[in-house]
Structures are given as structure tokens and as C-alpha cells.
Amino acid sequence: MLGTLNGALEVRGISLPPEAIRAEVEGVNEIRERVPVLTRVEVRYSLTIPPGKRDVVDRALATHQEKCPTARSLAGAVDVRWTADIREGVA
Image (cartoon, rainbow, N blue to C red; front, top):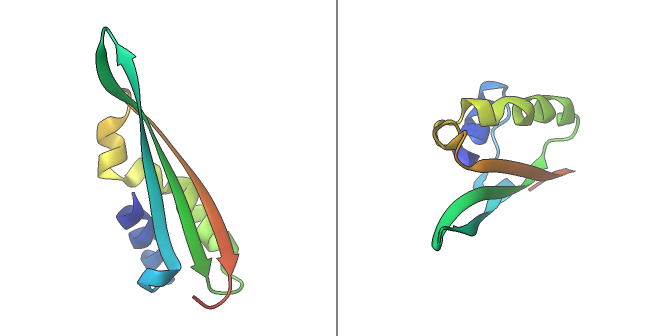
């Protein structure tokens, strides 16, 4: 999802250096019929964006999951959730 988000930002004219965009991802397993099954993926983004670009970044975030091949592949089987910590400034 990070790659899809980064691409969505670049299409909108926002190119972030690697230190300005990162994601922490956690998978949550549940035991079903004595078998561990991945049921949820939680993505936490940390972004440092150029001043005055928050609205553009918010629009990219709003649509990136539906454009992500991995998230689309997991749809219906694994709940994919994301949050974003966004700061304006220099990375």
C-alpha cells in the first residue's frame, strides 16, 4: 500500500524523499478451527509533506487503498485498515 500511496502522491505532483514517507504494518491473526488465520492488516503511515499540500495528500489517502493490488487481493478475506500521521514541513 505504501508504494500505491507514494505513486498517488507523485501523480499529484508531490514527490516525497524516503525519510518523509514510511509505514508500519501489523498483521492480526485469529485462531479458527485450531488454525491461525490472518484476519486483519493495520497500516500506520507517517508522512512529512510540503506545506500547503494537506488537501492533496488527504485525497490521495482517501483513494489509495482501492487502487492497491495487494489490498484488492485481500478484500473480502482480510480487513485492511490504515491511519496516517501527517506533518507539514521539511523531511
